[in-house]
Image (cartoon, rainbow over all chains, first blue to last red; front, side, top):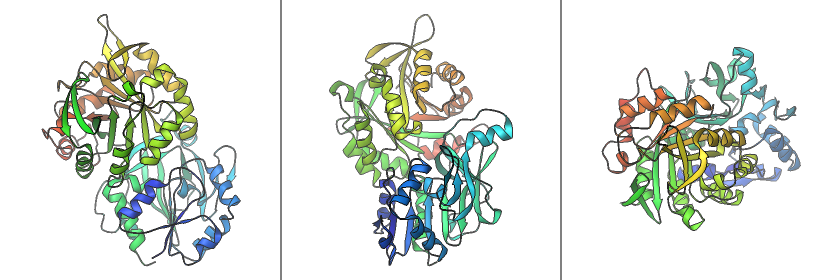
Amino acid sequence: MNIGILDYGAGNLRSVYRAVNHLGFEYTKVSSSSDFDCLDKLIIPGVGAFRVAMEQLHDNNLVNSVKKYSSSGMPIMGICLGMQLLFSRSSEFGNAKGLDIIKGSILHIRDQYQKAYDNRINVPHVGWSSLESYADDVIFEAIDKAPLDCYFVHSFMACNVPDENILAVIDYCGLKIPAAVRVKNTYGLQFHPEKSGPEGLKMIKNFLEHRF
Amino acid sequence: MSSTRVIARLDIKGKNLIKSVHLEGLRVIGDPQLHAENYYQDGADELLYMDTVASLYGRNNLSDIVERTAENVFIPITVGGGIRSVADVRKLMSCGADKVALNTAAIENPYLISDIASVFGVQSIVLSVEASRKPDGGWWVYTSNGRDKSEYELLEWLNKAVELGAGEILLTSIDNEGTNKGFDLDLVRVADQALNVPIIASGGMGRVEDILHAVSAGADAIATADLIHYGKIKISEMKHAQNHKFVKVRL
């Protein structure tokens, strides 16, 4: 199986590499549109800023490749910023367009909280939060843990996401934050499965092993 | 809300996991990597590696240990001791660290905090504060693993460091460290009331109820060391005993 990890020059991707290797899989780095040929699965990691990441995807002519890959039903797992890039747009440092694979906007947690509660909140949200009523989906297969805690590090959150695309949410000080989303075979995880212990690794394994 | 984190703290000297009392009087315990992997398997929420002699030599020597640990441990790893520059942080992160803990170098040059935050984000910086009670009330901040008294009083330093971009505070009581008599709860309370960043209570944990006390005082996480190193109690036992209506942990 040919597993690609999107490498667009952002952040530290090594923990994702290590997790994939640890699970007994090989991977190739995907950094140009030609790398998409004969790719079975794609992981989009991501640490850093939305706008910069999108610019890097544009500079490397990767935007259309990823969109085409997703719309043809090929499996993608976007992690943290890699999840946020799947959405239509982000308010991070002005307004930036995303990949627009999933409808919705990436907005600052503090703004959303202020709107709802007129109060202050600790941002970034760093730590373990419980996925609420996670949906019956292949990536959660054989993880029968309730509550299921995953590790989050983020300042922005997905908003106005169509209900049918949401697999799991967390409650952060009263805010319901989408934690796992899916369109076709494209997944987005707001948490870091590669840092979420054995259960997080199991999600990656489920994604890598499932025949979509 | 986020779960209360139970952090396994591993103080390292050379190649060994060690244990101290009041951050002094070192005793060798064993191979840090073996312990780290056990704690991961047993449900630790994070690992904290501290190079206890790094400041003496002016460099962090943990990159090898961190790199080997990161191959088998899939929870966040924080590394501290002797970190003096953005380049040091980059190196440790490429070895598998998710966050760094800063103490001595940040006190000598507080702008190191903002320099690192601007490159890696505030979530990557844990400010390590070693505090000891003053005879007349309040706390002094120490550096170099409790060896040297700094010019800072506790709150003055905490406020300054958080303003510069410290994302989290590892708050170690030198007075209670290694004594098993419980965390310095006044210390936690004072820091929590002054700040709105997560606080990790460290130094003195002796029994599982200390977790509840630390959380009640305002801690978001607790660091435990010799209790688990000496096998007095396992992390999983600790967490099962302390998951109730006042404390929620990841099980």
